[in-house]
Image (cartoon, rainbow, N blue to C red; front, side):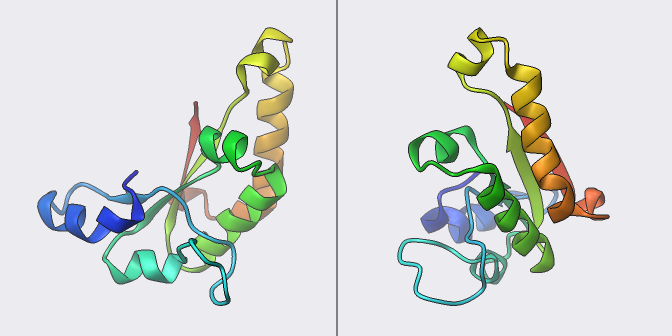
Amino acid sequence: GVPAIYLAYVKTIVPDTIGVAAQNCWKVAKGAFTGEISPAMIKDVGCDWVILGHSERRTIYGEKDDLVAEKVAHALESGLKVIACIGETLEEREAGKTEEVVFRQTKALLPAIGSNWDKVVLAYE
């Protein structure tokens, strides 16, 4: 994924056969969401992909499964393809909760993705 400020630049230097992904997007199209980027903005610079649910967003910003699902749904509705990240923390792994966590995260995404699996990559990190 590419930081938002560099999306347009990176899009101009990579071959068209390589997809460029934004690192995040917000869950609604319009409004006062300082510091966020909308799927429409990502598409405006010619990018078709967004990474959502990354472990850093989940741990640093406290993004929960329901918020990630809302972002995934809006990104897909807006015509983006999604790299949806799932995975446990070190603490969860050490506690033997990997399967439980990954199942919960995936289950939360199911309604958001619906029949759009051809536009989604599920990435375990």
